[in-house]
Length: 182
Image 1 (spheres, rainbow, N blue to C red):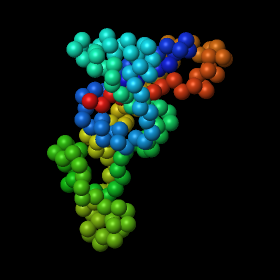
Image 2 (cartoon, rainbow, N blue to C red; image 1 turned 90 degrees about the vertical axis):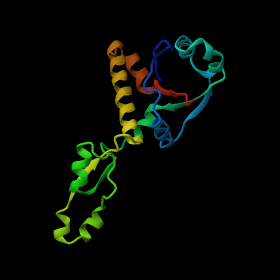
Image 3 (cartoon, rainbow, N blue to C red; image 1 turned 60 degrees about the horizontal axis):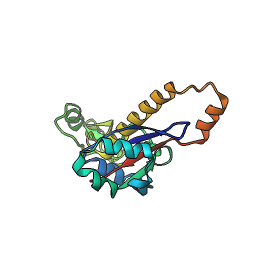
Image 4 (cartoon, one colour; image 1 turned 135 degrees about the vertical axis):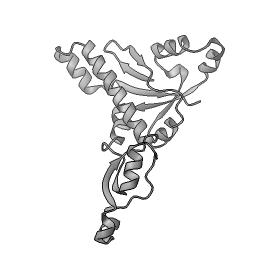
């Protein structure tokens, strides 16, 4: 769940992803998180969660622990380039990957290994940039995109012509991700 801090101290809540097994791999590749109890969440977040969970799980929710991640210092810096991999790959693997026949390219070469090949062998390879379509880096990119879209929508709703308000947002990190792993 994405939590955006408003000027008045309340939060706007926006669920991002749920039920995805590869989220765990993404979280394993993200460093710092703070573990908090349900009671540590903002009242708005608590209310939203209670209203959107089946009654039989509400008591369990009260004892649930959550991982929280600061978007700007923990999540976004992990996205260092558009593609996860940049290597020389066999042409047949690139075609198979681009057409969806395979999800991973295993037989890639580093620049050094590629340069050691004979010129005739090099013709079988092409420099290729790709991201594992079901991996943690793709999940990271999706989360960043979803968060940034929500932030942009949020800022459209907030009048930033006031210098004090602009200064407030400059010095405040209003975005954190709250994750419950079940």
